[in-house]
Length: 393
Ligand code: NAD
Ligand code: MG
Picture 1 (cartoon, rainbow, N blue to C red):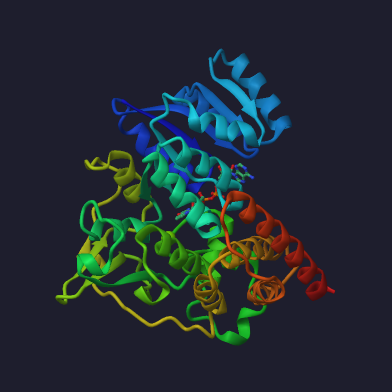
Picture 2 (picture 1 turned 180 degrees about the vertical axis):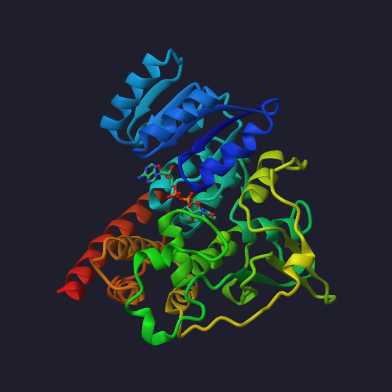
């Protein structure tokens, strides 16, 4: 029996994880579920999965949940606050942590899982973007196992040799081909991009996801963050990683070897596949995903990315090359800009402008510990807010 804590259980990845878990009650036991403030859904999840603990970040929401859990006669203990997120990760009887909180809020609890030597199913790419070296060091020191859940990185993980040691060249790998759907605005005339709404940006053609990552997909910042994520996961340089637009989202990424072989992982665009892979690794279990019908897919297309249409992608490559605090600054500025766009404070095309201005304004320094990351993150958020005030005036 594998004991699991799910960070962000009410989100898109969290609910997909519980869907897979529910198909295999003999294999998985839920120790803890956590959410920001969605009391109704977390209560229903407590009823179905009977976790030992449930955490609500928000104290008022936690009090409401505590009452409902008590009234329903459930034994689940309700905790609240950011420290509780770390607490339910490090319990000795927790084997596996699904890191599926969105954004920088996921960093501390995911890092706690790395320090505690857990098996980590990593959906929260922001952890690696912000604090890649700190996280990887913690992982190596504790012997924690890291399995990428982001579909592209899961595909690359599957296409690399088993037990890959971080040496691309030594394993005969020429490069990594990171696929991208191109999002909802792949073909939108550039003149119309300025006026697109949050609803249009969140209407992804192939994937149903949370709002932040949906906007990231529309701006292709998601792919930029994924390039940085791939850098840390596979010890790949910016030059080793080629982004390929593949609108059908059937090939989830590829690895090109020096002998000309190109290995790919294919499947329907359904996050339950990488989630089930991570949960069962190194075995395979049913994920509830429909078999891929290649006759229905019929054709697959591949196009080079348009860096003019998607400046966020260039900004991310640039931040990766600069290194140090630059990726953390990029991530923080992006989170603030995306929140402002979702709140109708700035236009879609202002997102990359805010990020570029913040990257320009802040000096880059080395990251040696978590504090360096948090300082850079806070400074970038402040600077991004100032930029947003300016552009909305
Ligand atoms: P989501 O918005 O649907 O869910 C986010 C979850 O985090 C919710 O449970 C929410 O309650 C919780 N949360 C939000 N803010 C919090 C805070 N401040 N403190 C504690 N908990 C908080 O997001 P999602 O689409 O499931 O994405 C989660 C992560 O997985 C992101 O990092 C995203 O980049 C990554 N990811 C998602 C997908 C996808 O298909 N959705 C694919 C690849 C990677
Ligand atoms: Mg992805």
